[in-house]
Length: 343
Length: 130
Image (tube, rainbow over all chains, first blue to last red; front, side):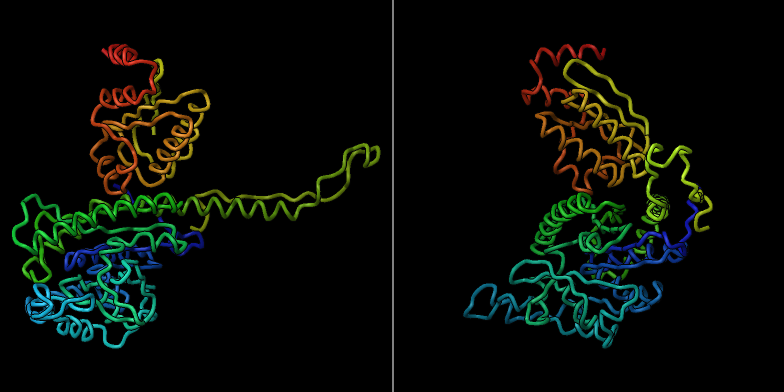
């Protein structure tokens, strides 16, 4: 297996987006792709994340090294974060006389999760993340996708992860924003809108064959299935819209993993590395193809620019006098070949 | 990418072999559109030998399918290779394109759509395979 020889310092290097979809802590498998691109000195121009993917993108954008961020998350995510029930809301599900449940409430109190994100990101703002990072959320009042491009990272990541009705949405700029899973589980369309040449879209998939047992398991499976259809529709629309490359990568898990399943850490890391191995040639080939195409376009534009500077076509011989020559200098255009361009 | 064409009465059978990506998408599109200009309306595409297909390749198939639909024709894909099947599925292409398990099924569905002159015609076409 040989890797294409990419020159990522050249003016024709493709602009790259890394999109990480929803998937709870499974999305931390996406760090392997970041490491792979870094190892090959391939710069990322944009990251777009949803839910667990938003957390992973924001951590990388905040400057955390993948290994350190992974370790920190696996340390902080524990069952206690998810076990503080809001009994007023829970009772409100059964009767409005017993409690209250509406679009601003959730079954689990969000304080611990919010604190965890605040401890991790502090007062960092989305505008400060490098590479530029966008966070997909959903307006729970309208169902519309809302992509956060500014504001506190901790707040935005919480909103993107606030899986309704488990967690209440976050109130940001007067809107109640919850888990991006409901509007764009793999927010590839956001990347295609932003003049990106190669979009690497990571879809974290549980390929589980067993029947779900219990309310939450059945509910989550239903959401997961619905989300698959939504992802496919949006992926298809992106392919229609986007005239460059979209590399779709499935990161597969053969069993369910809950956000608090810390013992799954090695399995998640392994799934990420396996997905990189399976898809690295596809990614590098897409980058190579785009770079060649951009080099070709650059040469074409150069030729056109030089052509436009050429003197106008000479008039017919009969109008130029008997000799037929206009004695003006000719311009010679030399086009460098692909192999030498930018290397 | 290798493209093998085979014309049988009303149907045009195509076999795509190799990688279908940005490098060869344009030439494949030109080839297929030329076939349409020459009168092909029912195209049945064997995808069993596709080693790889990306969004550039999917766009070609989509563009050909749209052109055929406008002309009351049809594009039917069949026998996708595992990689093609995975990409058709994850890209959502399978939601809009007709993808059949076998060549016979693809041809039968085109025939039953009323686009062929008669169902007998289909029997003749498939018999010729043996």
